[in-house]
Length: 460
Image (cartoon, rainbow, N blue to C red; front, side, top):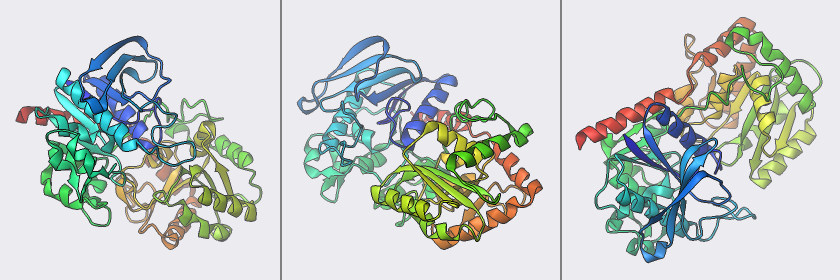
């Protein structure tokens, strides 16, 4: 089975958010399971491929010239890098000042049109499109192979002016949206299957609250919409082999986690009584809800609990977190930016992992935390619901603590409950081992996708 797998991001060559890790993990596991995956990514520049060759593509004048560099990458394997005018940039979406490139719509419409040209040139058994950046490919395809569209984050839809409807292809009418051109709504209308990245998110996006304005078109597709939970790269996130931590361990040697905790406390500069240590490794965006933790910083001593945040993003929120750390240095720490070694040490050294998302299509870091025996505190949204049963509500299967709503008061209650549970070493150890026992790899998700591909092929 040959699958053309198209995405705007792929770790490690183009990484902005969770899309990169998810697409890389799924594509590589599909290959391990015997699928011939043609990974197709924009050519943003500065990526060397071994054994490189070039494939020219036949596209309309507005998308010319279009070509594909084909070759082998040392980590991602065989790649098809799509070169269209304006695609090569220092960042896939943003200028150095943090604003979006003004021609983003044109860049990704060209990319999508090149995907369609490749499908016409070498028809795959299945076409798998990821998020809005690839969605317009279906506008140009009058002979469409069985097609899957994965929704990684519906909040980003790539809506562009309606003038694009005259360019993108003969099926452009499906992309008209309130006078504009919406790559996501057209792809949702035309795909054979639509997959959200967790079962709960698949239900949430059918509601006005989380459907981001297109809950109606999604509901119209009925059973074509399903949810398949993402996985994580368990070779990178493995406490028994992790080169970034000071003491390696596994579920049978959970006591060897302790030196990492000591090293993390020293790294963060915390002094004083031995209380539970919670961390967050995140992007500073409204979605991730880190601002909900700010009112709780002054209450950490009363819980009691120490908290450290590693992240980058919104400059105003970063300034607020710096100020909170300055006012409460014994209880709260903030490290701005992304530090790979520190992030691994935080997963290994913390007792608790806090993820206060307002919405979360799947989430990866809560799975990474549980892989390291670090108990999560999450909000009851999206993939967090599917991965973190509440320890008080489900005594048999609980793996963490769930705040009912993404609100500071609810998070405070969950943090209190988590702090109490950690005072009982046996019950704490039980939660740790439950999280570490789960197979968080891409094996099961990839199998589910292969089964979906086979069902679509059988219908044809």
